Length: 233
Image 1 (tube, helix red, strand yellow):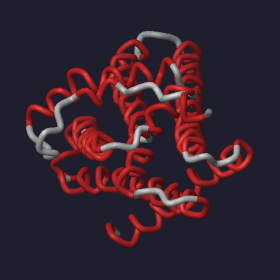
Image 2: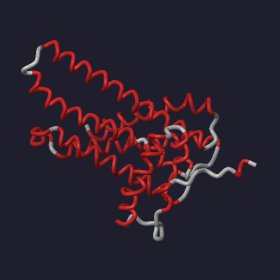
Image 3: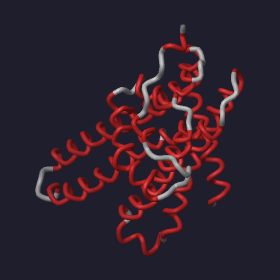
Image 4: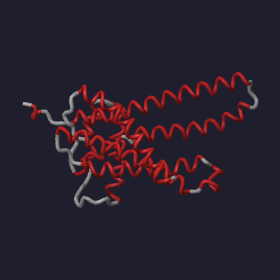
C-alpha cells in the first residue's frame, strides 16, 4: 500500500514546539540545527531532498517559513546597505528596507500562486504553503551573497588592474561576467525546482509540474515588480 512508505522526517521537526510561539530558544535551535540540516538537504539532494522538505505538513512548517522569509528579508536589507558604502548618506536606510520588502513580497507571491495551483486539484493549507516561497529565499540569498563577495573582489582587483595590462583587465572582467551568469542561471533553476517539487509533493502530474514551474517563477517576478512599482515609487 502507498501509505506504508513514510516521508523522511526533516531534522528541524525535532525542535520543541510546546507553546507554538516564536521564542528565542526555538529561533536559536533553528539557526544552530534546523538551518544547517535544511541547507545540507537542499543542496546535496536538490530533487528528493527539496520534495521531502516541502512534503512536511505540520506545525513547524509555518515556523520554518516565517523564519526563512524574515532572514532573507533582513539579509537583503543589510548587505545592500553595506555594499553602497559612502552612498548611504544619499540613499538612506529606507531604500534598503524597500528592497527587503520587495524580496519578501516575491516569496509571498510565489507561495500564493503555488497555493492557487494546488487548490485546483486539492485543498492545500495556505499556512503550510508559505514554506514554498520561503525555501525560494535560499537561492535568492545565495545570489545576494555572491554579489556581495563579487563586489569585494572587484574592489581589490581595481588596485591590480592599475598595474596590469588592459588585456588582462578585460579578460578578468569577462571571466567574472561568465561566473556571474552561471550563478544567476543556477539560482533560476533552483527556483524552478523548488516550485516543481512543491507541486509534485501535492500529487501534481510530472508534466504539469514541469511546465508550470518556470511560468510560476516568471509570473511571480512580474507581479512583484508591478506591485513594488505601485507601492514604492
